[in-house]
Length: 367
Figure 1: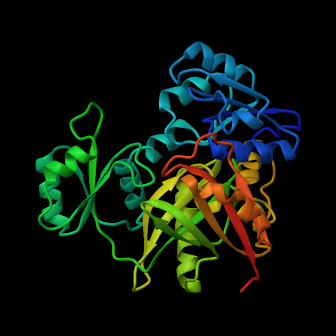
Figure 2: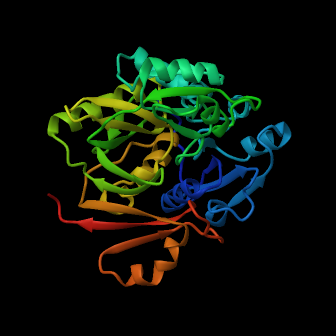
């Protein structure tokens, strides 16, 4: 479904940003280059990566209706850098200004069961899965789709959090407890373990008028459940890359996306492409676009929500992106001295294990 183009916001307008992390920071920097201001809203906005480079910041709870209204009236459009903003927050903001992506899309992206049901309803394959809301259901689901499975919380899990692996002989009750089972609001999903040749992702940008561009599929390699390296483009067959592109575009169109969507997929040894998960925002696996593409993923988000033409996704070079996790950031002097390295630091004061502190892009000759 497509709709009319958004009103084109002139430079000098203000973009409201829900969430205050590094994705918001890099979006605000891209917005500033095009002449836009950014106003950040988040409970933890004070001193945050995004607030450091934005014109304004509001520190308030997601359910503070008065603060939300004042925020909405101070900006010209609202977007987000974190898909777990409460749907009720977005619905309230829409009473006063445009919000992209909107609540219907977020309600799908926030819940793994809703997400997989939506994707499967489009005729797109995922790993086998079953809902599981207690230890008994975990055991039955594992018996149906096992013997190797992963139990995940349906909401909020990322970078390996809220997950427990199930192998033959594993204790379902222990796995259920490990993801917080039994706590209010915690539900689970058991996913069959996929033997895959590689994991790829495709990032799509889409405007309100249905115009759409997609970056080439990239390969993602993880360490300890966190993205470690992204290789652009993915070293897969042309047919596999085309199928990944088709899937990502199909999902973006069906969700009526206005903004940016990342779709993560498994490529099996026989070349099948299975959707793993999606995020309706800029994505870690798209950071390479900052230095290797004509238009980066963050500028595409700005263009989409401000009613501007989408930019070219031409790849100017091949690239390898490496995350700086925890103490990795202490290598910054050596990285700056390495020829051809583009260093991006997020302004976080404290390095902790598992915390993303920055990334580096290494540009390579096109293959």
